[in-house]
Length: 507
Picture 1 (cartoon, rainbow, N blue to C red):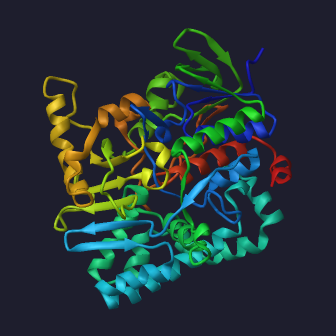
Picture 2: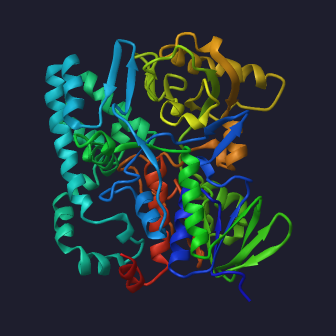
Picture 3: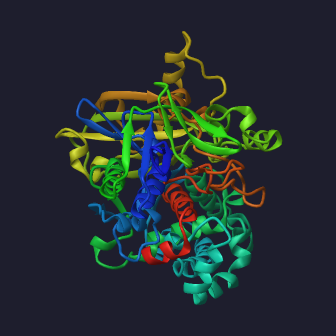
C-alpha cells in the first residue's frame, strides 16, 4: 500500500509549487516540512510584534494577468490570489559617488543614467533593447507550458509554434551570458558596474556569469506595466510579506487535496533496486510513495538524504563538487519610526567602488517592507531586513561567536546609516543571523542560496536524478536566485510527471 502518489521533502517555493500543481493534476501529495513554519528560504517569522521576511523581499508580476511570473501562473491554476501594494521607484542604489533611483520604466531608468553619464544612457538603451527583444520572444510560451523531458517538443509544436519561431531567432542570446550582451553594447565603466550589480542582485554572480534570459525576464517584468496607472506598476509587495505567497500556495495545495505536515523531518529517502520507494522520518515512521521530490539542496539531498551506494559514485561526487553561492549575514531590526518621512523600501549600498561587489560586506541589500505594509510592525515602528554575502568557512559556535556576529554586522549598520543616519539609536529589537543560522533554520548546505554555475561553465542539474522516481526542485536545479526560478523548477518537475494531454487540459 502506498501512503500517497508523491512525497515532497521541504515546503520551499519549489516544493510547494510542484506539490500544488500535482495535487491539481489529481495526485495524492504529502509535503513533509522539517521546520514548524512553511516556506523554506521564503518563510516569515514573528518576534515581539514584528513580522520579518527571512529571505526574498522584491517581487514583480504577482497580480497582473499578463505576468510571466511562474508564481502567478501556479496561483491562478490553484485558484488563489494575492493582495499587493505597487510602488515606484523600485529602489535606490547607493554608490560612494552618489545615489541612483531605479525606476521600473525603462525610459525613466535611462533618464536617471543620463544624469550621470549621457553616453552611458545611450548604451543602456542598446543593452535593454537587445534583452527586451528576448523577453518578447519568451512571453509567448508561459512557464506553465514547460516540462523537463523530450515531450516538451510535443507541447511546443502543438500549441506554440509561432512563439517557437521567435525563440529560435533569439537562440544565440538564450545561451549567452549577460556579460557577452554587455560587451557588445556597453563600454561606459559606470554603466558596466551598474549592470554587474543588477546581475549580482539577481543571480549572485556578475554579468559574465549570469545567463541572459534571467535579466531579460527581470527587465521585461518590471517595465511591462510601468507607465500605466500607478496601481498597475510591475513592482509589488504582497500584503503580509513573503508569508502571504507561502500561505496562498499552501491553501491551493490543500484545496486540491494535498497535505502539508509541519515539524515532519525526513531522515532518509528509501531506495530499493534503483527506485525511490518512500521516506523514513526522524520518528522512524516510514511513508511510501513511488515518486519522491526533494526540495533540499543538491548537496543535502545527495549527502544526507541518500546513502552513498544509492547513487553512481562518479555522479554523486560530481554533484557534491558543484560550486555554491556564498551564504549571508542577516540583520533583522525593529526600529522606532518617528520623524522618518519619505522613507522608501528598497536600498542597495556599495561601500567601496575599488572593491569587487561580490566581496563579503561590500554590497548590502536593505528592505524596509513596513513602508508599504504597516501591519508588519507595531504602530510607530518599522521592520528592517539588511543582508550581505558572507562565506560559511570559519564560522563556529564557540566563545568568539557572539563577538564575531556583532563585528560582521557592522557593514550592515554602516549601510543602514546611509538611509537612516541615527538607526542605532532607534533599535528596539535586533536579530543577527550568520551562515550558521542560515544553515540551521533552512537546513541548507553551508547556508548557501544555491549553485554558483556561471553562464557557459556548465548546466544546472535539473529535476531528474539517476534514481527512478526521485526528482529534485528548488534553487539548485534552476539558474537564478529567487522566487521565480524556484517556482519554475516546481512547474517543470510537476509537468514532467503527468501526460501532455493533462498539461494541455490545464493550459
